[in-house]
Length: 418
Image 1: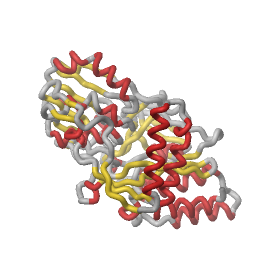
Image 2: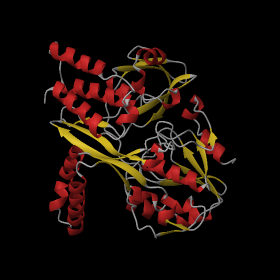
Image 3: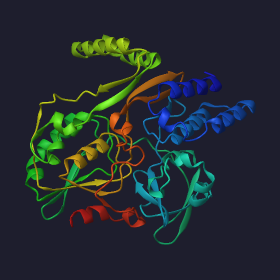
C-alpha cells in the first residue's frame, strides 16, 4: 500500500472511529510526519521502516499507549535493546538491565548517538517521549532508532557502545520473597495468564495469609487478562464482598461506527469456525450484536465482568498491605491499583501509574504488512472528569524517582516502615 494512502486511511480512522480523537486531536499536528514521508518518497528513500517510525511518532504524540502501529515483516522482527534508561534532575541513568551485559544499573548516560539526553529532549518534538515529566519519559522507542550510547560506569570510566538487538523478553513469572521479619514481597509477574497466577497464589496461600505485612510489587507489571486479578483481589478487599461490588463502575461509551463494527466482525471470523463450540457460540453472539450496533455511533453501555457479579471475593491476608506503583504499571496492573485505591485498605507507594485506563475495546485493522490498533470505547468516569488519562492512579505516598533506585530498592525498604 502506498504510504500516502496509508496515512490518509489512518488519519480518517482516528478522526472518525478512535474513541480518544476528540480529547487528543489537538495534541500535535500530523503534517510534519506527512511532510517527512512525502520528502522521503520524492527522494526515493521510502521504506517500510520509515513508515513505521513516522506513524509510531505520530501515535506517540497522542500519548495513548492503546494506540499501536506495528510492522509484521521477517526483515524487521521485534527486538529489545536489553536495558532501559530513565531521567531525573540528576541526569539520565541505566535503570534496568535484562540482557545487555556491557551495561550496569546506575551507569550514567552521557549521550545517545553522541548527543546529550538534555539536548535530545530540547530538540525533539516533545510528544515523542510521551511525557512532560522527566521520570515519566518513554525512551525505549528512541533507543530502538539509535546507533550507540555513551555511558560513565561506577568506576568513572567512560565508554561508547554500539547498541545491540536482543529477543523480546517473554512474560515474567510470579514470585514471592521475604523482605524482613513477617514481611513478604509478592510480584505477580505479567498478568496475561489467570491460570498460572491462580495456581501460584494457591501454592503460597499460607505464606500470603500468615504474614504481618504484604507488599505487592506492580512497578513494571502489565498484562491483558482481567481474570488474572481475581486471585489478588482478596488481598486488597476492605471486607468480604462480591465481584460486582469490587469491580465497581463499568460504564463506557462506545463508538459503533459502521467501519468499527465491520472490523470487529472481521476479527471474530476465525472464532466462528473454532473447534470449541462454546467459543463458536460466543463469536456468533458478538457478531450478531455488532451487526445490530453498526452505524449507531456513540452508545452508552456497561462493560461485562470477567466473572458472575455475585461471585464472592473474601477478605484475606494481613491488614497491612502496600502496593508499589510506578510509571510502567499499566493495563490490568493499573486497573488493580485503581481498585485498591477505591477499596482503601492498601497503601499505594511510589509514583503514578501509566494512565491508560480511560480508553478500551481495541480494534485492529491490517494494511498489507502493517497493523494499526486503536480503542473504540471511553469510560464514563473519564467523560465525567474522573479519568486517569496520562496522570495515572496517584499513590498515597509519593516518592520521586532518583538515580539511587538503580542500585537499591528504596521503595521496598520504605514499604517496611509504613
